[in-house]
Length: 411
Image (cartoon, rainbow, N blue to C red; front, side):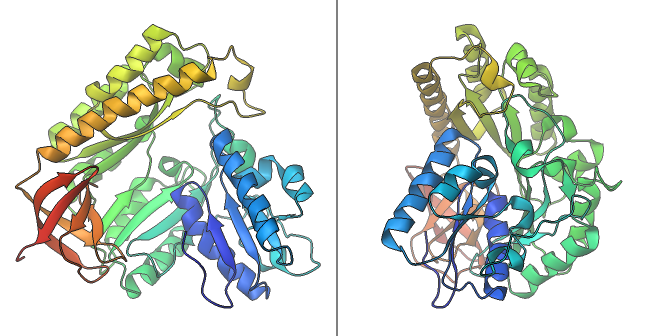
C-alpha cells in the first residue's frame, strides 16, 4: 500500500474496485474538512476475513499512531460500527463517506438522503487506468451477501455526472476506464436507463481508447450489452461474470437469477461471437448444504465456462443473511474445496497463457513502467521499462508464473 504525500490524509482502501474509486472522494472530503493528518480505513465486508483484516489494521494504526485521528468507513464499518468505535475509531457510513462534514473535528457525520443519485467515484491521477464507480447498492436478495445491509438498495449516478467524471480521467491522460459498481449491470434500473446506454454514451467521448466492465450478473447481459461486448473493439475482450456456483440447487439456495445451463450458454455465445474474450468469474466453495456432487458441478464449471480469471473463495457466514442460518459446511472442507478450485483454475489459466507465447498483444503500461495488462487482461511484464500510461504493441516471449514476459515491438 503506497504512503500518502505530506499533508495528505492516509487513505487505506480494502476490497473492491469501487472502494478504490471511492477512496478519492474520501480523500477530497477529508482534505476539505482539514483532516490532513487522519488515517481513514475504507473497509470491505465481503467475507469475514475481510472484516478481520480491517479490525487488525485499525488496531495496528492505533498502536503506531496513538495521537492521529482514525476513521473507519466502508462496508465493514456499516456492519460492525460498535466494534470499530470501541477501538477508538470514528465511524463514517458508506452514504456519508464523501461528505466533508464526516471528517470535521467535533461534527457528527452527515447522511445523504436515500433519494440522492449516487455521486460517481473516480480513482486518482496516480493510476494508469481510471476506475469509475457509477452505482452502489443492490436491490437483489442473494442469501449469502451482506452488501445490501451495508450499502442499501441500488442507486445509480446520472449520465451527466458519469460523463463529467470520465472526461476528467481522459483530460489527465488516462486512456483506459474501468466501470465498476456493487451491481454494475443494474445501472439505470432506478432511473429508467441501462448499462448499455451508458456504455454507448461513454464511447462517444473523444480520447477513450479502452473501456472495461467489472463484474456482471449473467442474467443481465441483454441483447444491447451483448452486442457491445462482442462488436465494439474499444471494449476490452474480458468479461467477468458473477456466477458464484455451478450447481442448480446451490444457485437456487443462493437466490441467484440464472441457471448453470444459462451461464454456460452465455459464455458459448460470447466466445462464438468474439473468440478472444477471456472469461473471469466469482465462485464460492462450500456454500451451506453443498455436498460432493454439488461441488463437483461447480468445479466442472471452470472447464465448461472456460474460466481463466477465477475469483474463488470459501464461503463465510455473514451475520444477518439467510445463508448464515442454513446448515453449514465444515470450514476446513470449504477451504479445501476453494483450494481445489483455485488449483484447477490456475492450470487452465497457465495453459491459456502458454498458448499465447509467440503472439503479439497490446498493453497499457502501469505506473511502475514495467507491468500492465493485455486487452484480454493477461498480466504482462516488460523486459525494459516504458512510460506509464503508454499503450504499446508487444511480443509475448515467455511465461513467468502468472505473468507473460513481453518486449515492445514496432506498432
